[in-house]
Image (cartoon, rainbow, N blue to C red; front, side, top):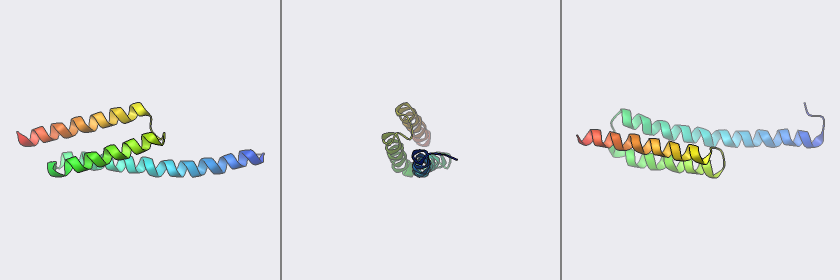
Length: 92
């Protein structure tokens, strides 16, 4: 346990921030999983909306510095690549 008042305050702040970050990170993971599920189930008509939602969640997390900017770019790229491949497979 911290011995100083400022250290105790830091512990409280870190707990609040951790809880906030966990909810955002959880929302990101959920939206990405929804995209993956739609791809597996071949629900191409829902894909555009789900990908847009996932990209929005990722961007929000990057803006709040919960994920890094490069992680954002990589994740969005992989999402789009998978979605476009699923759409191409559905058309063929």
